[in-house]
Image 1 (tube, helix red, strand yellow):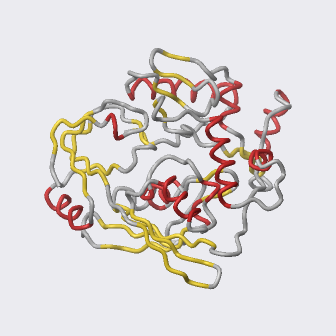
Image 2 (cartoon, helix red, strand yellow):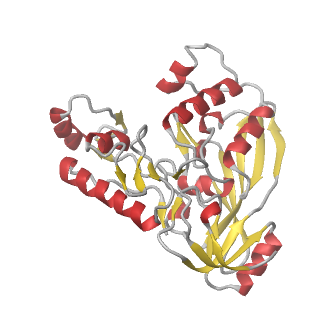
Length: 333
């Protein structure tokens, strides 16, 4: 365990922003993590860096969570509980589970980030959310340095939301997550239209085939952060009243939507952004991806502040044109 001063975080965030950490240290176990927390009162926790936009240097001690380890135990004839440390890469974990023939998270293939952040955002894609498989979350209390277990219900999961973004934000560090997955009789979800089309109506696809379909779909729509800086979906899909949706539908009959309840409707944020004329636009080194309007990108040397300014331009126009307040999904730092 070694401290570094004035450390560049460019390789530690998927936007590729060259912000600096006043101090930086990578921890590989709970003992190291506790030690750093005892020595430093003002810290910033960094996982995979896939859901943050750094708008300036971090004048704190940045703790990179590099906790590793995966274990599994059979709980019933057809199910298994798999525990993964916070520093494990999410997509690599998904592939590991598929290789073991553990089902339940294959639809979440290729989502960037690490295990430790998946409960915070309640990551989801193609008809699945991670909350549907999480048994419990282990976290370290930053003040007391004691471990606490959060059950699925304790986590208060919602759409891209959890207790870790609200009541206990900045009070706990997630150290590992336990998932309940199927082991023999898999209930594979291919109801999402794009997956069904990619599988060409294959009646009994394997976990690997579903995962490959998702990977193919995501690669078509989303840029690789290793090639062009981005954080995946930048905005949440807004949920609006049926009345507001109908008023927009009068002007745009082609508007896509997904019913949430009798009174609420979800509208794809990407459609709103594209309809507002932003898809593919570039503002210096910052811009909107030309294939997926929901993704903001760094073409090479953009600052976080420049990307944030593009996001605010989008928010302002959509508020003006559709009376919708588009909420940012990425954490602005």
